[in-house]
Length: 179
Image (tube, rainbow, N blue to C red; front, side, top):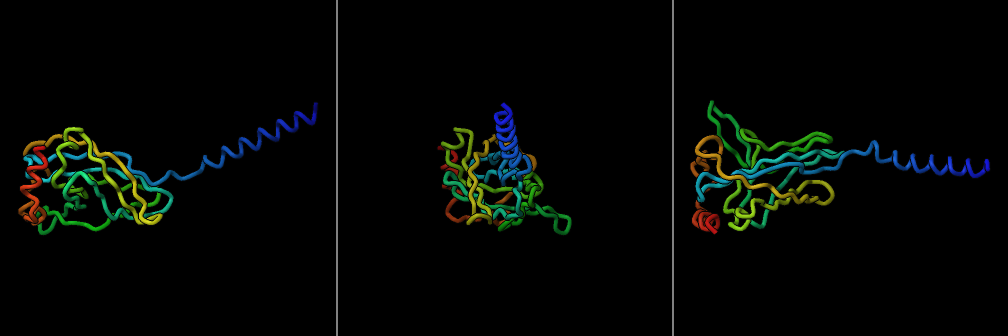
């Protein structure tokens, strides 16, 4: 009977020690929340906000893409000479075990020509591309919300800032949004 009790105790200890391996494991890199706010009119770009939870290593977000929009750019709102302006950015740091937040008044996405079917479905499937593991891609659906009206960032004239310069897409963007 004693050998059986010893074997059972040893098996239990091994099982518990295996479970303990995951207790201290770092959380993986992940997109944990986000949404898109449509432009005030169909010819205006939408804006995207989201939060990324950093994994065990620092990485950079180098692109956000979707097949259901004509163009997606990462931007940052900055104050220059007392005036708020926006500038495109090519990457954003995600600290190890920290977070990267794209929010109103800071870093954000500008999204032109969202497919009408995505708007009707209320979600925009996005790919977030990072500088780890051969440019790891994380898929995440951003919820699409209607325009917030004529205030805040949704009302900013992105065309006047050169971000919506006619590249043959303005009419197409308006047409796509109507579909």
